Length: 262
Length: 371
Image (cartoon, each protein chain N blue to C red):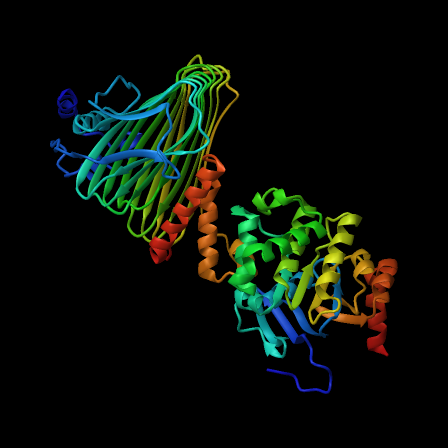
């Protein structure tokens, strides 16, 4: 399904998305368009529906899409399973990545790259060089490869590992769900550099979900959206993140309420 | 025939006994008629390094006349029965004191196709360092393995037994004494047999003994895999950990019963046992009963636990979000679960070998592991 318009083709488009879980509505009509090469940010309080949006785009089975659509390159994703979405180029950097004791990082990365980019991409010197380069960029030591996936990792290690996966999987659309939380300022700069490398000057896009403007200072989003109560109440340029940091979400609620009255 | 006479004088074991609770003796006996002591062939036994090259000087495997020594902590029924059926199939592996090798040794037992048994006695010299894999393979109808012996003072040994028969029943009895300050990893990797009954006992009767007992068990189809593990602390400053991982699919059943005994006088003993069971289908069943008998007050700790559960939905989602289809994601999680104990069993070379074995086994069993 494609939405006919005179706008440029979107990489990812969310159309009037309503989502619930266990009979409770969480997202109540969201619209969003990300063009190739763009970075968008969604900001909002806890419980506003940010993580729900990320999980629904990735295809988490617990959520029920009540209405609307999510499209990648003009094609609906809603009938696709999570692994099919991943192979089509959707990547979610999890807020709380799962630990898998017994599964070594190196083995996991090879399997994942082979699944998404093909067997040949996960073999030989070219893959090793690519892996080493990405690990160096993220300041991840080689010994990491023999550890178990997220098992005993610190908060910062988990987030860097998510970004390492993003760099190796080369997604069309990267969704970063609070990847900046738990990171110190150096970690945020490292993660931001990883996002910029993966998206800027490419046909890929990114959706950054965050509470704070700090990471956005280093990534410079094209658009910032504010999610409150399951709806995007306002959108703007990167300056919106700074205004939010200074004035808080109450300010946005007042402004949007005043706009509605007007 | 002393063992045969002793066996025939015994009563059928009572199922109230911890060891026989889930798998009665007549279900394990080769004919089901427990008054019989059938004649058995000897299986083929050989030893090489893991890369197939001959073992170096300091290790000798030789055929010997089997005799059962004094193992007061063993079950009299299985010990005397295996003693009786292995009188002509005894083997001794002797490792010289101070022996040291980087390459694991592979002791291969080919059961052939019929009914066979082997008594393997371990004579591991003091201060030796080695990894020994005992692999049981073949398509025998019934195989009995009795392992007895001593691991000498100050030795460092990774002693891994891989039960890899394609079908049939395997009865395994271990009774191993761990010497002063010896450090032992005793690993069991089991899959393939239709029925396994194992009674594994480790005795630390001298100060400073240290044993880690590790299990990696894969049940599929209608397999019934029952392992009983006893660790006896009978000296001060002894240490043990038991970590047992069983994954069972199809309508298979795995049983893990543990008995940890800390005898009076074992001051400073430190012991713990835990069983983890991964249930892969609605019809699979896993039973674990860890038990403690602590007769010494001044211990560092004695603990036990058990945990059962299916594959974790969040882990499955995480792997699928990384492009693995549901079947791959399941296989990876099963392998990871079993690898948690495999990876503790020894060196990188040993681990690599075990991982290939596990992958091959998961592929062979395929859908019979799942729903």
